Image (cartoon, rainbow, N blue to C red; front, side, top):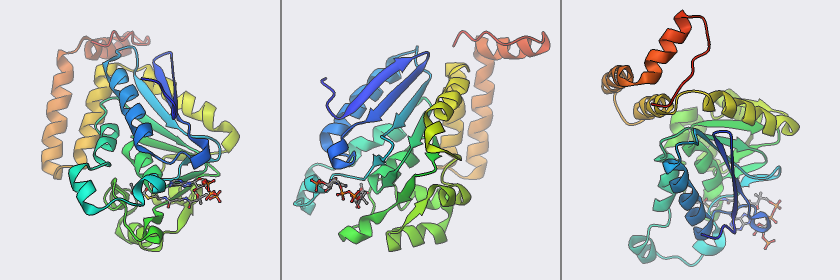
Length: 257
Ligand code: CAA
């Protein structure tokens, strides 16, 4: 597929997807999502890749769903073709994804960041769900994941007011894992990605699965699932290598099996 709206590269177990539709502030048009899904599908099959980074430019991560494309839609067109449905492949992706956010992450942009596993924000990042100002509501998890990230009161405030919050506020509310100066964003994201990429791929997938399950289940079900996933690591050579290496006081050499 020809990539017109994203840039994609791979290096040392890390793939980076750059949203690249500058004229429209990376608005998430249908074609951009198709390209993103095409690349994620390739990456899911590529055993050499352990971690994915999704980023935008220094000015904008993404300004939301494409308002030009949505403007004339009617209920019947949503029923026939739910254009948000394909976005779910981001949240269904098995390997770790880091959102590296500078500038605006609004509406669907904030929602895509929340679909990722870790959000690192530059100090110029601004997060918000401004759909209320367009006479609509969030549709890609903004009323769901945001509550889990920041709690009901703050999620209500953001969704009902449409106001943006700064990176510092997003950190204080628990939406992002860290805030770094804009000029350090790339290096800090790469450092975290490298650290994660050096782990065993199957163990990363299981760890992500265990945490992701906590969003969908009760505590007791999540605990059972966690225990079973933990036990399943005992079938993997990398589990044995990790513990042996610790006891032999050396770094583990994971074979991803
Ligand atoms: N869709 C389509 N085009 C968009 C866009 C979007 N979401 N956001 C910005 N653009 C376009 C603008 O129309 C403008 O295009 P033209 O030059 O052709 O006029 C261009 O990008 C630059 O935008 P601005 O001139 O507005 O730039 P700014 O720097 O003054 O403001 C901004 C930046 C505050 C992000 C502002 O563009 C903005 O508020 N954008 C809309 C944000 C929004 O409402 N997002 C929610 C979308 S709905 C959604 O996402 C639903 C869902 O849950 C899935």
